Each structure stands twice: as C-alpha cells, then as structure tokens.
Image (tube, rainbow, N blue to C red; front, side):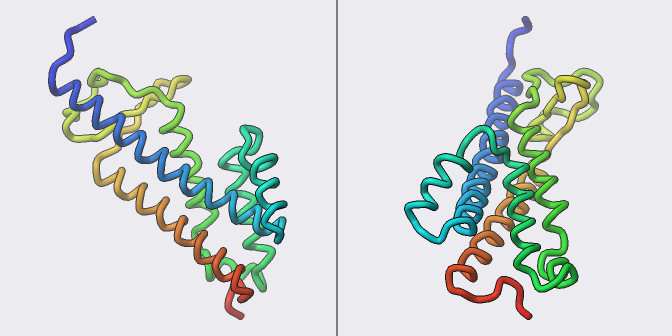
Length: 175
C-alpha cells in the first residue's frame, strides 16, 4: 500500500464531509416525509407517533417508497393532474433523483486514491464515488454538492409548506 500524501488525506476528509452532508440532508428530508405521511394517515398525535415508530421509521419502508407515497398524497389532494403539475412541476423526477443520489452517497465506494486514468486532480472535486457492480466513477465538485444540498433543501421547504397548509385546514393546491 502506497504511503498517503497530505493531498490524499485532504481529499479523503473532503469526500467524507461531502458524503456526510448529503446523507444528513436527505435524513432531514426523510424525517419530513415520514411526518407528513403519518399526519395524513392519523390526525391523532398518539396514533401518528405509533405510525411513525411501527411503520414509517423502519428499514422495511425505503426512502424511495416514502417519496412515492408523498407524491401520491399530493396528487390525491390536488384538484386535478394539471393543477398538481402546475404547483409541483418537477417534484416526481427531482425526488427520484434525490433518492438515487442519496443511495449512491450511502452505498457506493469512495476510492481513497486518485482514480487511475482520470485527468482531474483530486483538488478539482470533493468526492468520487465508484459503483461497486460496474466500477463506474462519478465525480462531484464543490458546486455540485451545493446544488444537491439546495435541491434537497427545496423539498424540505415544500414539505413544511404543504404540512402547514394542511394543519391550518387550507387547500393544498389553490383552486
């Protein structure tokens, strides 16, 4: 094993920080999804807590299935498909993309050395992820990480928006 240089160590720490940041932001989003779904199912606080603990906050219900359920609830509460698409134009593809990226950050390998054959210097990107089954490499720059965080945070705000409207008894979609 080659001796680590300070540059490799710095790259490794940046990669770990990027990975942790994306995963933490998606955990916040996932908790919001769980709360919204539980609120939709149960108006009673005690039953909502039971729903969260026994059903939603388990390993059996995936992040992707929570986003799908959230979207189905929004569609059901919308006056029409057209109104849903007007109010939430990219929500389905965005949440599917967030779920895919979250899974990559959670499960893909982060090479600790500069990937061979890659022309970029490790200082040009924050993290490189290698898909285990295909060895496909994906590089994320600092700006790319910020864009991912902004997209995740956008949907945390959407969650709070729809939850507050629902709690206040206002229609989810303006009619």
